[in-house]
Image 1 (cartoon, rainbow, N blue to C red):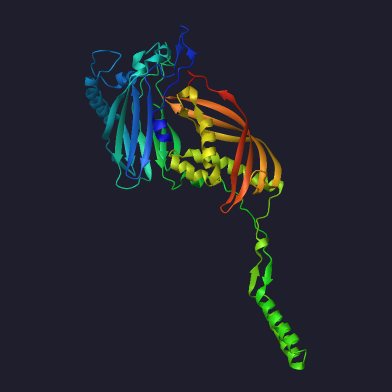
Image 2 (spheres, rainbow, N blue to C red):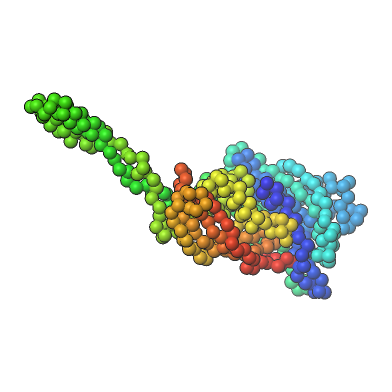
Length: 420
């Protein structure tokens, strides 16, 4: 669910920044590229989305209309771009240079309602093509060296006497983890190393629920001693009865360390003190957001299950997911940059009022920094929340078993049209 969203981010139509003539400009009003890289066990795959302004800067393919691309012309553009990237880009897997394989190409329908945001490039900024380049691997790569070799002028920020080249801001997906990657004309190379870690390995440790020492009952000794007493009473306290009883008691005393059983009512987990409750909640809460470092929905759910009780998984998934969606960016999903706890109060410890389970309630306030990166720029936003959480004991340990958002507000946001 999330990866298709990330690979097809749409641009919103909110007011942007102003150019020289007072017109509203979008930061991709010039040559622009959106690059996604997937490191997989059998290949490294590049999704490269380019607008027509970028295409015209790197290849020369005659077209009937300067600011558009006819379907008949698509194969020529595809061939020219493939030849270009084979020449200027390079991918090296574990020390071996691998040639790209053309794995797909398509022209995307432009959203012409956005034309007012692109007074400089017009339709050339909105007509886009996406190519897929595969670099096959004989085995799961441990080291991937990537060189991006083409940098058109950044017309969106340049002007007379100052014309920088574009920065290629990409995102690399591997093992469920997203890594930002940046290629520039001065630093065109990036090397990825396999760590063997997944997003789950980055989860913070949560203190385990502590069970008190169970009361051990000396069952075997008790049975032997009781048998001796029964013999004593039945033989009416004669001499042999006393000898048998005393012998049974002696054996029972010797066997006291053995044959003991725990009383079931004494195995309940101890409730934490206030400081311990804080130490339990903070990593649980942080791990909820770390679960969204994954891109596949099933992986997110698996990671969430390490912090959230099963009955709450769907609700908390939707709650956090809604908070990460940037509607002004066409519904794009933010990547969490940082989660900052601001205030935390433990309001109750014991039997929870809603379901009778043992645990504790906290009132938490925190901020979340999120970032959407696409088309050579990024949009940042900081949201602040206050919520009441219930943390409960489960067979798997402490888990968030209930939540209620009390406050939600946007603290800051990169304006549409401002580069990141």
